[in-house]
Length: 217
Image (tube, rainbow, N blue to C red; front, side, top):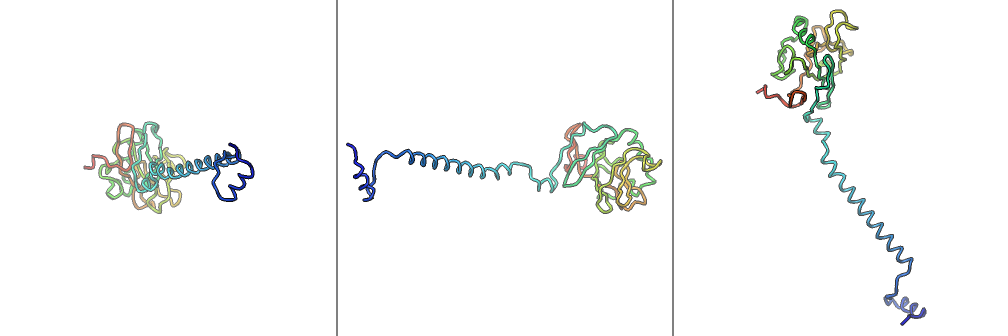
Protein backbone atom coordinates (compact mmCIF):
# COMPACT_ATOMS: atom_id res chain seq x y z
CA UNK A 1 0.00 0.00 0.00
CA UNK A 2 1.56 3.32 -1.06
CA UNK A 3 1.78 6.37 1.17
CA UNK A 4 0.46 9.61 -0.25
CA UNK A 5 2.52 12.79 -0.25
CA UNK A 6 0.12 14.42 2.19
CA UNK A 7 0.49 11.55 4.64
CA UNK A 8 4.31 11.73 4.39
CA UNK A 9 4.19 15.41 5.20
CA UNK A 10 1.90 14.76 8.17
CA UNK A 11 4.20 12.11 9.59
CA UNK A 12 7.21 14.42 9.41
CA UNK A 13 5.38 17.30 11.06
CA UNK A 14 4.00 15.09 13.81
CA UNK A 15 7.46 13.68 14.62
CA UNK A 16 6.47 10.13 13.75
CA UNK A 17 9.36 8.08 12.36
CA UNK A 18 8.99 7.07 8.75
CA UNK A 19 10.35 3.79 7.37
CA UNK A 20 10.41 4.97 3.81
CA UNK A 21 13.43 4.13 1.58
CA UNK A 22 16.28 6.74 2.04
CA UNK A 23 16.80 9.06 -0.89
CA UNK A 24 19.92 8.98 -3.12
CA UNK A 25 21.20 12.14 -1.36
CA UNK A 26 20.91 10.43 2.04
CA UNK A 27 22.82 7.40 0.75
CA UNK A 28 25.66 9.54 -0.56
CA UNK A 29 25.91 11.48 2.73
CA UNK A 30 26.02 8.24 4.72
CA UNK A 31 28.73 6.78 2.46
CA UNK A 32 30.82 9.95 2.79
CA UNK A 33 30.61 9.86 6.60
CA UNK A 34 31.68 6.19 6.71
CA UNK A 35 34.71 6.82 4.47
CA UNK A 36 35.70 9.97 6.37
CA UNK A 37 35.47 8.24 9.74
CA UNK A 38 37.61 5.33 8.53
CA UNK A 39 40.24 7.72 7.16
CA UNK A 40 40.48 9.64 10.44
CA UNK A 41 40.78 6.38 12.37
CA UNK A 42 43.58 5.14 10.12
CA UNK A 43 45.46 8.43 10.47
CA UNK A 44 45.17 8.24 14.25
CA UNK A 45 46.51 4.69 14.28
CA UNK A 46 49.45 5.69 12.11
CA UNK A 47 50.24 8.65 14.37
CA UNK A 48 50.11 6.44 17.44
CA UNK A 49 52.50 4.00 15.80
CA UNK A 50 55.20 6.63 15.15
CA UNK A 51 56.50 6.82 18.75
CA UNK A 52 56.56 3.03 18.91
CA UNK A 53 58.60 2.69 15.72
CA UNK A 54 60.88 5.51 16.86
CA UNK A 55 61.53 3.71 20.13
CA UNK A 56 63.04 0.80 18.22
CA UNK A 57 65.63 2.99 16.48
CA UNK A 58 69.10 3.53 18.04
CA UNK A 59 68.94 6.31 20.61
CA UNK A 60 71.04 9.39 19.81
CA UNK A 61 71.25 9.97 23.54
CA UNK A 62 72.65 6.46 23.98
CA UNK A 63 75.23 7.13 21.27
CA UNK A 64 76.25 10.38 22.93
CA UNK A 65 76.54 8.58 26.26
CA UNK A 66 79.08 6.20 24.79
CA UNK A 67 77.29 3.33 23.09
CA UNK A 68 79.90 1.08 21.42
CA UNK A 69 80.70 1.72 17.76
CA UNK A 70 81.82 -0.99 15.35
CA UNK A 71 84.32 -0.12 12.61
CA UNK A 72 85.39 -2.24 9.65
CA UNK A 73 89.17 -1.84 9.38
CA UNK A 74 89.58 -4.12 6.37
CA UNK A 75 89.06 -1.25 3.92
CA UNK A 76 91.80 0.97 5.37
CA UNK A 77 94.85 0.90 3.14
CA UNK A 78 98.32 0.85 4.79
CA UNK A 79 99.40 4.40 5.51
CA UNK A 80 95.82 5.69 5.53
CA UNK A 81 93.34 6.83 8.17
CA UNK A 82 89.62 6.36 8.80
CA UNK A 83 87.40 8.45 11.06
CA UNK A 84 84.60 7.08 13.24
CA UNK A 85 82.40 8.88 15.77
CA UNK A 86 82.11 7.87 19.41
CA UNK A 87 80.56 9.96 22.20
CA UNK A 88 80.22 12.78 19.69
CA UNK A 89 83.98 12.83 19.14
CA UNK A 90 86.06 11.90 16.09
CA UNK A 91 88.10 8.75 16.55
CA UNK A 92 90.96 8.13 14.13
CA UNK A 93 91.89 4.62 13.09
CA UNK A 94 95.35 4.68 11.48
CA UNK A 95 96.66 1.66 9.63
CA UNK A 96 100.39 2.22 9.94
CA UNK A 97 102.83 0.64 7.53
CA UNK A 98 105.64 -1.49 8.96
CA UNK A 99 108.01 1.43 8.31
CA UNK A 100 105.76 3.83 10.22
CA UNK A 101 105.55 1.51 13.22
CA UNK A 102 109.31 0.91 13.19
CA UNK A 103 109.89 4.66 13.30
CA UNK A 104 107.94 5.21 16.53
CA UNK A 105 110.64 4.35 19.10
CA UNK A 106 113.31 6.30 17.20
CA UNK A 107 112.14 9.75 18.32
CA UNK A 108 111.32 9.08 21.98
CA UNK A 109 113.78 11.79 23.03
CA UNK A 110 111.63 14.37 21.21
CA UNK A 111 108.43 13.48 23.06
CA UNK A 112 106.96 14.79 26.32
CA UNK A 113 105.60 11.41 27.44
CA UNK A 114 107.15 8.68 25.25
CA UNK A 115 106.42 5.86 27.71
CA UNK A 116 102.79 6.88 28.23
CA UNK A 117 103.24 7.50 31.94
CA UNK A 118 100.14 9.71 32.06
CA UNK A 119 97.91 6.67 32.43
CA UNK A 120 94.65 8.58 32.03
CA UNK A 121 95.41 9.03 28.32
CA UNK A 122 95.15 5.36 27.35
CA UNK A 123 93.98 1.99 28.70
CA UNK A 124 96.61 -0.17 30.38
CA UNK A 125 96.73 -2.55 27.41
CA UNK A 126 97.83 0.35 25.18
CA UNK A 127 100.60 1.61 27.43
CA UNK A 128 103.31 0.70 24.95
CA UNK A 129 105.43 2.36 22.25
CA UNK A 130 102.74 2.11 19.56
CA UNK A 131 99.84 2.67 22.01
CA UNK A 132 97.74 -0.04 20.41
CA UNK A 133 96.54 -3.63 20.63
CA UNK A 134 97.71 -4.41 17.11
CA UNK A 135 101.07 -2.73 16.41
CA UNK A 136 100.08 -1.44 12.99
CA UNK A 137 96.61 -0.13 13.91
CA UNK A 138 96.43 2.99 16.04
CA UNK A 139 93.18 4.23 17.59
CA UNK A 140 93.11 7.77 19.01
CA UNK A 141 90.55 10.47 19.72
CA UNK A 142 91.12 13.27 17.21
CA UNK A 143 90.90 16.14 19.69
CA UNK A 144 93.93 18.16 20.75
CA UNK A 145 94.61 18.00 24.48
CA UNK A 146 95.41 21.71 24.56
CA UNK A 147 92.10 23.49 23.91
CA UNK A 148 90.00 20.85 22.19
CA UNK A 149 90.73 21.72 18.57
CA UNK A 150 90.88 19.02 15.90
CA UNK A 151 94.40 18.39 14.56
CA UNK A 152 95.15 17.72 10.91
CA UNK A 153 96.56 14.39 9.74
CA UNK A 154 100.09 14.79 8.36
CA UNK A 155 100.88 11.13 7.78
CA UNK A 156 103.59 11.51 5.16
CA UNK A 157 107.19 12.25 6.01
CA UNK A 158 108.52 15.73 5.32
CA UNK A 159 106.25 17.83 3.13
CA UNK A 160 105.13 21.15 4.55
CA UNK A 161 106.08 19.91 8.04
CA UNK A 162 109.80 19.98 7.27
CA UNK A 163 112.55 17.47 6.58
CA UNK A 164 112.62 16.05 10.11
CA UNK A 165 108.92 15.19 10.16
CA UNK A 166 108.28 11.43 10.18
CA UNK A 167 104.48 11.55 10.10
CA UNK A 168 101.81 12.32 12.64
CA UNK A 169 99.28 15.03 13.46
CA UNK A 170 99.51 18.79 13.59
CA UNK A 171 97.07 21.18 15.30
CA UNK A 172 97.05 24.41 13.27
CA UNK A 173 95.26 26.34 16.04
CA UNK A 174 98.27 26.61 18.35
CA UNK A 175 100.96 24.41 16.80
CA UNK A 176 100.81 21.20 18.83
CA UNK A 177 102.43 18.18 17.18
CA UNK A 178 101.80 14.48 17.74
CA UNK A 179 103.44 11.40 16.26
CA UNK A 180 101.66 8.48 14.56
CA UNK A 181 100.86 6.99 17.97
CA UNK A 182 99.30 10.24 19.16
CA UNK A 183 102.23 11.07 21.47
CA UNK A 184 102.88 14.79 21.90
CA UNK A 185 106.17 16.39 20.92
CA UNK A 186 108.09 18.57 23.37
CA UNK A 187 107.44 22.30 22.99
CA UNK A 188 103.82 21.79 22.03
CA UNK A 189 101.10 23.70 23.89
CA UNK A 190 99.27 20.39 24.37
CA UNK A 191 100.23 19.02 27.80
CA UNK A 192 99.48 15.33 27.17
CA UNK A 193 99.26 12.69 24.48
CA UNK A 194 96.06 12.23 22.49
CA UNK A 195 93.51 10.00 24.21
CA UNK A 196 93.31 6.33 23.23
CA UNK A 197 89.69 5.24 23.79
CA UNK A 198 88.78 1.81 25.21
CA UNK A 199 88.52 -0.62 22.32
CA UNK A 200 88.80 -4.25 21.32
CA UNK A 201 88.40 -6.50 18.30
CA UNK A 202 85.37 -8.66 17.56
CA UNK A 203 87.31 -10.42 14.83
CA UNK A 204 90.32 -9.80 12.60
CA UNK A 205 88.66 -6.95 10.69
CA UNK A 206 86.11 -5.52 13.12
CA UNK A 207 87.12 -2.98 15.73
CA UNK A 208 84.67 -2.00 18.46
CA UNK A 209 85.21 1.34 20.18
CA UNK A 210 83.85 1.74 23.70
CA UNK A 211 84.34 -1.87 24.85
CA UNK A 212 87.41 -2.85 26.81
CA UNK A 213 89.58 -5.68 25.58
CA UNK A 214 89.93 -8.78 27.73
CA UNK A 215 93.67 -8.07 27.88
CA UNK A 216 92.94 -5.38 30.51
CA UNK A 217 91.89 -8.01 33.04
